[in-house]
Length: 185
Ligand code: M6P
Ligand code: ZN
Image (cartoon, rainbow, N blue to C red; front, side, top):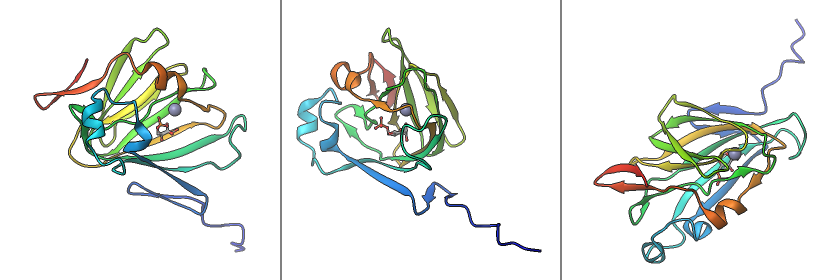
């Protein structure tokens, strides 16, 4: 049998690791999250180099290619700024109609979503949880546990990230620790 056309895949997803030549890694430290947390005093008292989260992603084609898909794993560390859990920046998609899947791999957290009218709702994330984020819905994740939260994501190439609206207006609600319990306030 000629096996010359049987090759190893360019990507291996094992445990919560994404391995491959074309995997890109982005790092977000507290200093990259200025203005995101409500307690500015607590924020400025923390070392700005603390790692908040990392994203390993694989884009098989050039960003913007219609019909293509991106795959990523986010590693969100456990921590709080005052009473607010570590969170991802959060974004709408630049192309409003583009949806996305998230799924929980390790740890526990909460996926926070918001529509255009600023209505906010949330879903618990845990190993095995699967979340469909429809087009037009802003999304961000909080780590509510005391260990690393890792979650997967798959989104269309041409979705793009619109961070501006969240940077300016934030989400309509925040996820705060109230006596050890996460509350959307
Ligand atoms: C997921 C995907 C990525 C996103 C990342 C971090 O992996 O949604 O597109 O970049 O989470 O989220 P954010 O870009 O909001 O910081
Ligand atoms: Zn997205």
